[in-house]
Length: 105
Image (cartoon, rainbow, N blue to C red; front, side):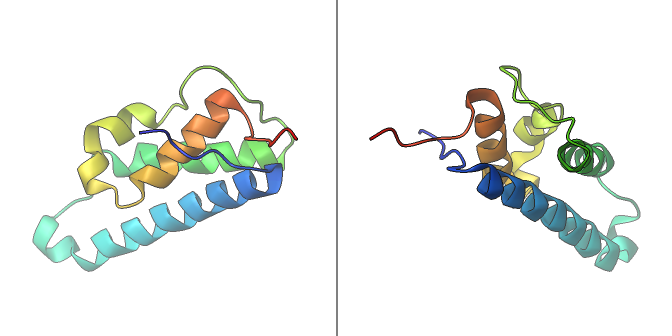
């Protein structure tokens, strides 16, 4: 299956913003279930830090595309069944590795 890549820098930034929102929402879901679970799953904090670090690098103008996976992709690959927005993270990573998908006419 081929993953969609962002078609513009603006779309890419919006995807990363959406991922930051989604990880906050996931944390809120775990907060709601904390009585039953007792603690957060081990992947949540590093995932949250990785996404927010990625966004911060964009805000600060320090971001650059790379051929290597983003730092949090190992977590995504191991816990994709527990991360409802894993496809979004894979699309972000695909864009990170291969660049913006620009149509050439």
